[in-house]
Image 1 (tube, helix red, strand yellow):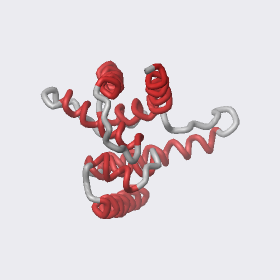
Image 2 (cartoon, rainbow, N blue to C red):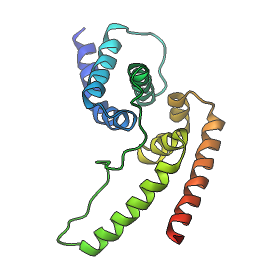
Image 3 (cartoon, rainbow, N blue to C red):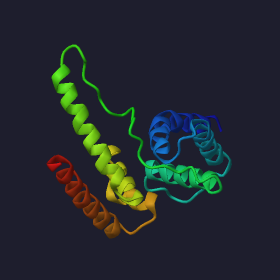
Image 4 (spheres, rainbow, N blue to C red):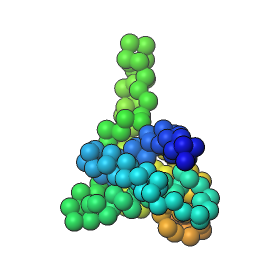
Length: 170
């Protein structure tokens, strides 16, 4: 029994920040997000299953996604990627002022382009590029076929490139 609690604690510590970052892309209510993550782990503890899980990361992300969607179904507060994403690395102001300004402009251009994509394309880009998930994990999270994941990502990247090219021309 104690070993199971320890294992759950390890899972919580390992995946909390990933779940929080992913959940913050779906909803803006931070308290609700934290509650949903805690509920997710509570349910994991209470509803132990013998079904094999191929990827715990994909399973947890998918479960959180549906828990948040369920919580927001009536409120309609689901959002896309936020422009003030804390995951972006910012260079030292003193050392690289010019480089920083150029990078900030590139980031703004990228964020504007990403926010013009449909929600599913934004989600697949986030999962594949920002979180480094493989096609199988994305397939599980988004509940779509493996080949559909590949096609959707290809389509999303093509659309993204067109938007970037258009933005740089203007």
